[in-house]
Image 1 (cartoon, helix red, strand yellow):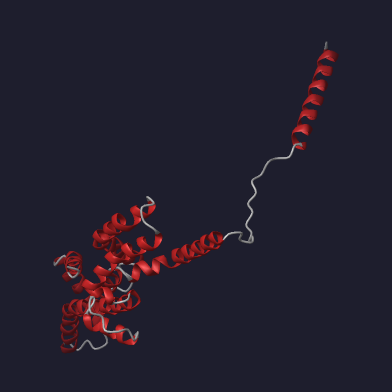
Image 2 (cartoon, rainbow, N blue to C red; image 1 turned 120 degrees about the vertical axis):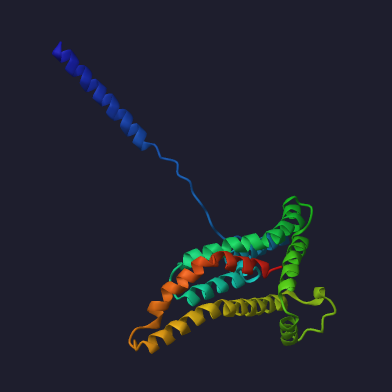
Length: 252
């Protein structure tokens, strides 16, 4: 009986070993990806290749482009002024300021984004308009937004530098001249609002410094004494609410 069981186990082990060898002998199918350059047989192939390269380049530069043609520049500069005026160094952190600036940018740009989606993106995805028409209709809402926030003096500066004929209407202003004019206008507006924010905190610093000098505490840094008072003032007047309200209303 024991011999029969031993022979049966040996036969089972031989069968399993044979099956395992046969299974491992079979090749395992693996996916393969080929990336290469082939000769174009039709002019359309070249056009499609150039479009793909253009889209890849556009996706690479998209973050910088979206930042420079939206309200992000003004918002983030103003919030940076607020942090410097209070004197809290890295509080709030840069990630918090940038994240808040991005969400406020989406809030301000939402009407413009809706127009771009309805006038350009959806018709293009539906195959109703071509790529060139989609670009023209998509840029137009951005141009309208930038014209509302850009000073005429800044537009005239870049039109003169570009050696373009004097435009008779906003449509005659090229986009490559409008974008830098919009950027410097945003920076000027941000610095003006930042100056107004700096004034009350500067007064607190001057009052604290004069009190310390009158008390003979020349070696004590005034910033150490004025910082808690500036934070207290900012919290009591609900500073973030006031700053956000001022930033949002500056775009209307």
